[in-house]
Amino acid sequence: MKLTLWIMFGLFKKKQLLKKVLLLSGIPDNREQFMRFAEIGKSDFLKSLVSLYGVSDYNNLWNNYSSSARALQNTYKTLESRGGTVIRNFSLKDVNRLNEFDIVIIIAHHSDTSDEIEVNGEMVRTIDFVNAFPKDSKVIIDLTSCYSAYLIPKIKAHIPLCKIIGIEVKTKLSFRLFLIEKVLEQLSKNNGNSYIDALRDVLSSLPISSDNVQVKDETPGVHLGGKLQSTVYAPKQVKKGEDFIVSVFLHKQEDSDEIEIIARSIDDISEKRNSKRLSARIQKGDKVDFQLSVSKQQVDFFKIDKRNKGFVWDGEINNIEFIVSVSNECNISSFVGNIKICINKEPIGDMAFKTSIVENKSTSEPAYAEFEFIAFDKQAEMKEAKNALIQNLSDKILLLDEQLLHSDNDSANALSRELEMCKRCKELLETSNSDRHNGVLRVFISSTSDMKSFRKIVKDRVEACEMYPDMYENWGQGNDYPRDMCCKHVLQSDIFVCILGAKYGFIEPIWDKSMTEIEYRIALNAGLPILIYIIENYKEEMEKLADEDRQKAIRQEMLIDEVKNKRMVGIFPNELGLSLLVNSELLTIKHKLES
Image (cartoon, rainbow, N blue to C red):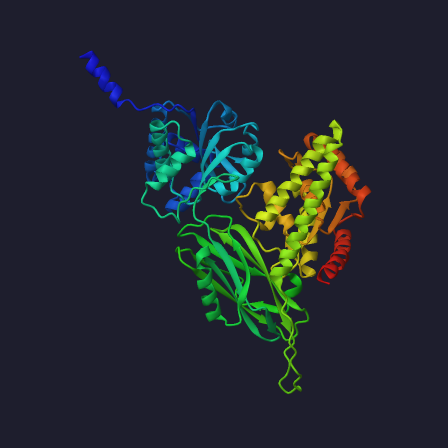
């Protein structure tokens, strides 16, 4: 009898996981914990539930949420029965335990109104959450959190050796928990499987559209969700006093031919002005908004019927139209528009385009003979510019290889990092299909994040010169490793502007340089026109820094000394001084490039 019972127990006992799995949960799984979050009064997760269920009374809110809490408890039991570890109400200290495990699942809530993640009912800054991860971690992380596309690049930059999986915004908690349990079941059956392979197997067995859920194993992590692209159509040229239409489409890449037909039916002189693959995943039911803006200098001459327009994505081609009216008194040569794209009110990127403005000649004026002009080949110009950058980098790589052969131990590390940087940028350029110009010169603005007022001054001056300011504030979410994203934007620019002050900034762990220094060296190695501006009192400001920033400021002082010794720089005392310097020098470089 005992033997029979023992055999039966063996048959029904769940198979154990060979891999060490940790689950960190930061959301409530019972009524007591739920009400404690409510008493603390800082829980953004509960605020999101109020918005989701349309209920503000916490007792009624719990009744709506209780089924999700039970599902969460079932997931805990499933994992623990298979030998896994669960930490409920995890803290930042628990994040330090990553290296004890092979797989770490994090269930948390990220605020959509601030740069904070919720840990045990308290809001914690994203940077503090990211810094809690051990730098040498090599685990697989399943980040079951909202805004994973935003969080993953930040975590990946801090722990580049990890594999990170993200489940995209608006995926229901019940579905996320269902996936986790199914993946654990797969791993128990076949412990030779990786977590990512198990997830792919589970998804392939589900009756869901591949447009809504996708798994991609790529840097910086793996995401679930469908990608689309946005395309702008507008005339290349319009006359003063006339109206023109700007059509913006959201579509799949394979629908490009169809949207061209639709755009021409709306306005037969429309042409494709820009197209961009969106970095964020979009699902049916997401709200997509477009905002068309122009620089302050253009506002008086162009009227836009409505600056903000949008729609709810239904999975098919969709578009909006802006109507732009050109004043008869317009005294500038072109309309430079910038379209900002938002998904569920989160900015994810923008697109610039340019339309030329010409005189509206009266029909009473004598007619002149028409001359045939050779059409400007924009694609050839872009290819030539890209090839020039690649050649510059190739020459630099050969030079660094030669220097490395004859270098001593002290200089070898610095040369190796510089060589790796040039090779990576050459690779990014060779594999990139993005346009560099799109009809308007692009100016990359580089600085540490504390220089916001000066960045705005440079941005305003760039727009006043009818060029496009390329700056991280406009990028939105992306799937590239942050360093690579910065490199791509620098290499796609025509002019590089760098503002240097007291702070050195965040140090990228692989190349061991601040992002600002990396951006400067990329521009230098690629042979881009460079403008450097240094604030006059940077040494005095360094003395006021906190201890951690003051230690890094030594490197900032070395960078400033190097720059001042090697090239002409602009020294400015305040915003007005910077504005006067930038305006004239930008116009000079613009004239040279356009000539």
